[in-house]
Length: 456
Ligand SMILES: Cc1cc2nc3c(=O)[nH]c(=O)nc-3n(C[C@H](O)[C@H](O)[C@H](O)COP(=O)(O)OP(=O)(O)OC[C@H]3O[C@@H](n4cnc5c(N)ncnc54)[C@H](O)[C@@H]3O)c2cc1C
Image (cartoon, rainbow, N blue to C red; front, side, top):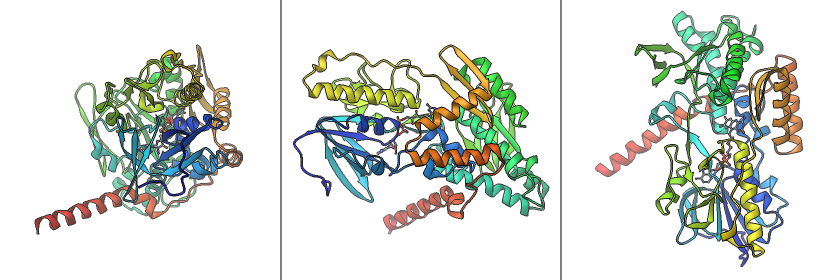
């Protein structure tokens, strides 16, 4: 199927896959280029992932971090935004197939920019996902909000102390930035926001556990900042369990193997998975048709110009790309997008593709919040922690949020939460809280119906 509404054009065709940091920035940087851009993404929004944990813990609304892509690009006339999940890329035919509600659309390209990002990795144990959602999408964040607040609600109605304890135990797996932020915010939710709101339970007695198979908190930020984050979390009452390898996750809890081989069981109704990422499967589709290699996380090893070996018109950027010295962070995707857009523009003006300068990444540093008024930051060789790191974190995240109204709404939400103890987004719905388990049940029912059909 072709794209209705699209004007046939003999301009250079650029297809961008993904509306995250990489995809959106690539399209925007081509604003003044004489090209015809099709941006295809499987969600209608541009998601600011670094603040997902604040949606999950009721600080901000999903709309504040996920503005509609087509509205952002409304004035960019050379770009058409198309909703659909890309299922195939044909490097020889130079086409991309995407599906929307059962219809497959084929889009031709002259230049392809693939920025489909990464999903959660359960290291081969995808069955854990049902009971320990990750933190990659708006659906994940809203479902987690439903589970976290729903656990407090159930505990209030429970007269069984053992069940109550299980309901009030929250386990976050993975002590990277997302895990640290999530554990800190669940602890503050229980200690500040919900304090005194229940009659039968005391929310401040909730147990929050942050565990990791690694021996340190925030390993990429170094020992000193990791220790600072750990101390601050412990002051908040978060239990940190390191060298703890998760071997099983089920409805009622989590099983952990210690370094001495002991197996422990933690009874916990709410589990959050923030350990490990796995690049989009589109990476493998590209590797299968080219000389590109993929690593264990599914990232495509691109050339110094971010192109796929043997295909100078196909670029992979952001979390999907494996480039030495470039971390899987927003800056990696944004800078990659700018670099590729500049190549496309200069080559349209006649620059020689064989003379491309290699991509070079400028490290602007990394940060993670631990709790209100406390963060850790590493900028070049400078490391700092505490209130000033937190202010720097607030400022930077505001700068990168897309849209003026979004920034204002976020400032208001932060003021309510950080200066008072309220959170403006504590609404949960049954559909959010049970989403994943119900969808899986529907899939099981559908599979049984198919089996029965096949057998008859
Ligand atoms: C919870 C969390 C917190 C983070 N915190 C920070 C932080 O504090 N600082 C920082 O720098 N980085 C942070 N990151 C990492 C940062 O968000 C990523 O590095 C960045 O988003 C990568 O950009 P990208 O464009 O490669 O992928 P994404 O931003 O993930 O975008 C991928 C896009 O591709 C689309 N897509 C995927 N598959 C398909 C398909 N088959 N068809 C069509 N569309 C598809 C998606 O819908 C999405 O629009 C965080 C990530 C997470 C998950």
